Image 1 (cartoon, rainbow, N blue to C red):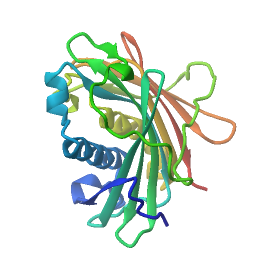
Image 2: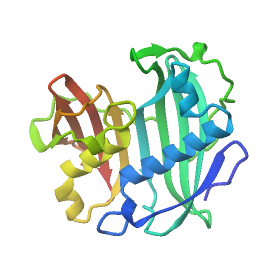
Image 3: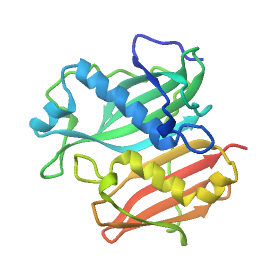
Image 4: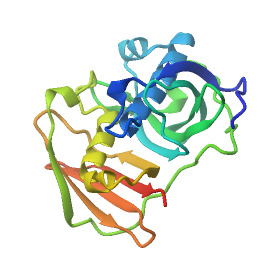
Length: 248
């Protein structure tokens, strides 16, 4: 159970039926959207909503998120979602999240990296250039998952899925929304999910934008510890890599 520290910004949320898979459990992509709604709400409360940042030539882009699933939320389950921006290291901001039940049961912990860019040029904006104080804190929760490194391995050769990028995948940054990539990973792991294997740890890093009309080829390799390493590529290079560990 997690203490609802004053350091964390929290909101109430709920799992809708369209957030769930055929097991009545929240999809990873929906959990990421849920956490991002929380951080967007925090930015609004701080007086710096996304629209304001974009109008001033800045946009926060998620580059990596690491998720530990304690128990996947179920359909219609009320949730408490918390977030805290916790450090700027080099060019990257760090942000932690949790999702818990309304009774205080820890459901999901997450750790993420973000960068600030100028949307038209895609050039980096360094944290020292960010003109607002959003009260960055040191990491608070000992149980919050930290960064999960990716393995140093060859490019996986086993093709698991080929996915065309459609209108419904694109967000207002004119590229594939980061939550959609989690669905691409699950598409590639469909046989494992159909076998009722439950995700324990999910980590994904975004490398190159995917645009309308692209085709993403997702390949995978099962590592020695049983983890699945996945790589998504389009004609301009690698667009994402992901590491998935299933529960015993």
